[in-house]
Image 1 (cartoon, rainbow, N blue to C red):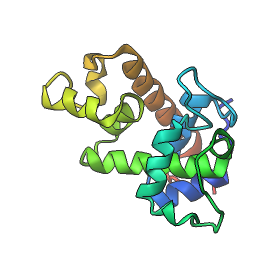
Image 2 (cartoon, rainbow, N blue to C red):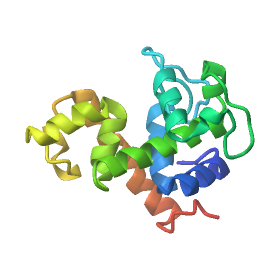
Image 3 (spheres, one colour):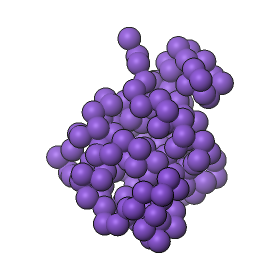
Image 4 (cartoon, rainbow, N blue to C red):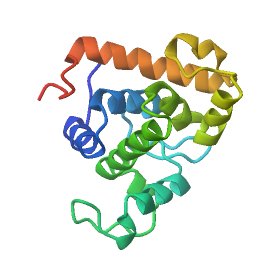
Length: 172
C-alpha cells in the first residue's frame, strides 16, 4: 500500500548524503508521489521537486561544477530533462536535505520546513520566535502550505518507519 519506488537510488543517495533514506522517500512521496517527470506550477522538477536554479546551486556546492558527478556522469547545465533523471534528482535532493539539516543544527523538522519554504524564511521564523522548530508545534508555522508539507512528510516518515523498519536500509 505504501511502496517505495527507486529504492536503490534513494539508498545510495541517502548513504552518500548521510541522511535517512526513509526521510528522502517521504519527501519524494509528498512532493511527486514518485512521478519522475512531475513539474509543479512553479517550475519545480522531478521526484524531489527541485527548482532548476536551486539544483544548479546544489551542484556547485557538491563540487559538481567540474562537470562530473560521483558516478562519472557528465552533468553540465541543469535542465528539466536532467532533473527528471531519478538518480540525479534524488542525489541532489538528498544532499540538500543534509545541507539544510546541518544549517539548522541537526533539526530535521526545520530542515524539511526549509526544503519547502526556503532556509531564510524558516531561519526568520525561528529567530523571531514565530515557531520553535519542533514537530509538536507545526501549527505555529506561519505559512499553511509549509505547515501542511511538514505534517505530510513526517506522517509518511513515521508510517514508512513502521512498515519498513527503522534500520534505515529500506529493506536491504
